[in-house]
Image (tube, rainbow, N blue to C red; front, top):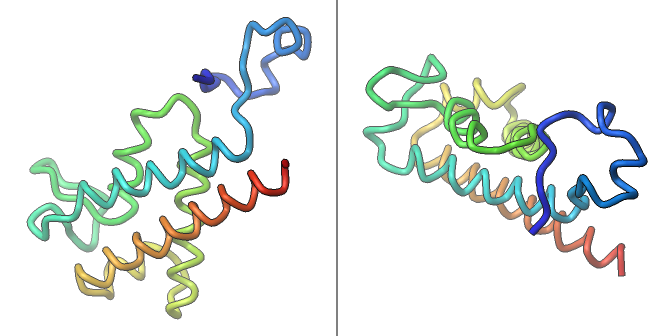
Length: 136
């Protein structure tokens, strides 16, 4: 299993990587992690009682789409999968005519937001597959 970097790659020397002291995740691993993060985030708001509009999160465990991604990302050692996950949600939001994920969340039904997560997960999985194929 590869170790995720806590620090940015700029803080890690090439010598450390070459010596095997630090393992850098491959692009495919990053995309796979983004898909997993999106699945976790979707799970946090799957129950309509845990989803909300107008704010990122509320102390009683309710979250919007972005708040769910942020909550799921707290468990990760690197921000890259969270950035990728958010970019996939932005792509889906824009395909639906919204300028950002927050607007999509606040102006859509709970079911539509869950479907947006499903589309974003599919994008992440497709990207991971394409990256693996390109590397071969």
